[in-house]
Length: 224
Image 1: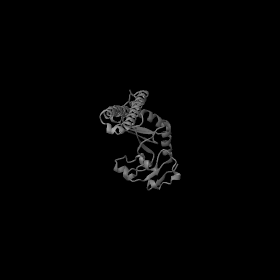
Image 2: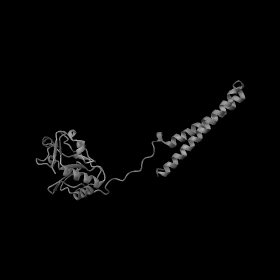
Image 3: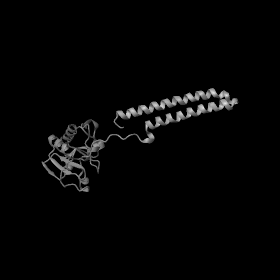
Image 4: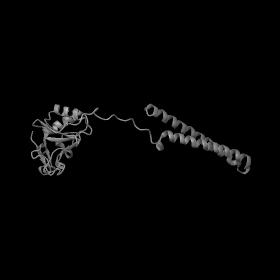
């Protein structure tokens, strides 16, 4: 299959780009924006992405000759042919990645564990560098989500509301008794205070319900 060169990745017609998980900008030269499309190489890259079922973070794909010199690339680097890709291993198990890439048909492999990526190209068959250290597991086990921050905790909010409302209701009741016994001139206010006391009681009940719901929710999530 023939290659296609563009002076800038923005010049690529959208209708001709058929690699759905990658964009021209990802494959273009990082230094100049130029792009050499090698369909055979991109077909294998897309097939590798499909096989692994997770994103491929492309560190470097096509390199223009001037950019290749600037970064100290090999004089006959496959990157200048558009047939090589440097893929980050941040979200991949290197062993599984290599096996999948070989199964797809990539032939050249370069291992860069200190920089965190693997180079793959269409060949000839060869490899260099030291493989990534073996991992006990492909990725670290996910830690259970932390409990809510205390200041933002639903339990604390609910309990706090219930406590404040309970104290408010008790305070209103005391005020009613004092007003009824000593302030006959303000007796018309007593019915309103009674209504206020019931409002506080309602808020307290709602707060208690919120606290209970939050505790049950935490228990269901295994966060207790």
